[in-house]
Length: 426
Image: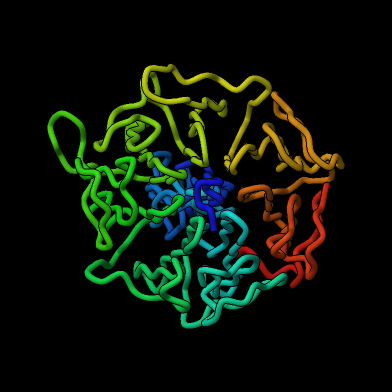
């Protein structure tokens, strides 16, 4: 697979970094990562960051593609925020990560695969599986949800271009894919993990001490350890200047970059987006509650419900016109989506936007047809999925590997229901 095509993660939906137990949460892209959770909820394990109170702890994203992913426990994939009822990584774009709510609901999407936590705490994945990213014990693609073996009590998920990770069993972290592991394998030496995010070929997580760790490809400095050397084992992310270990409540991963959300609302990023191998501040961002990353510019959900996106070092984050009251974000390869009032969804960018058109470019956010009551989002390379309050999932976009979960490989220009019924969410 050509991972340079995008972070198919998803990642990453990210809901407000409030708390996983509280308000409406969402997943992370990236694909990355944890999804930020709902506003001011109670702490609860999440794929995003969940903490308690408005600050919350980052949950893993999801919500973007990558997704998410923020921090669980107390979700921003994504991915990346804390999941409320909706779930990170967070977070979320290729790196996105999907956040998970206290009820263990979270979704994540990556290059051409999608995953979702069921209401019983088990995990299902579907779509492309050439690198064993579905955790099925084989490399067969599936067009309907397929159970990931050996996991229970899943609270956060993150999907990368070729791999998937999950927090389960009270803070254990397991990953699979990247052609080597067809079933989940525990990340040794860590318990109490709070959030996870996955990018193009790297992944990051927040430990029980709120420290950010990363592993995988490091050609652009996306591991943030001050080197450009890849690492199969997790390394600590350090801040530019003083070299201090980076701590966070949420994390999200893009194709070749990573960002973390601090408890005070500031954001640090590293890798291709900053041209640095250590974490540097995003200028002017001080009230972020969730974030999402994908192939390009990461976006940040602010406490006032508006969204800013950042093109990288030397630039200033720009407010996305036409968005208010946003509760979650997800970023794919060339498109972005947000949950708005009444659980509606608005998307912008290029691709199948859910409006009945085969392909389109929308420079400003447009409402997706027929959606309401959405509590979590995930965006992959060219597809998007939404978790609704009735425990059903709907997806739209490309479907060449069955990534929409509809039992076929026919693309959808408007949202269609994922096979399985109302089995997702708390």
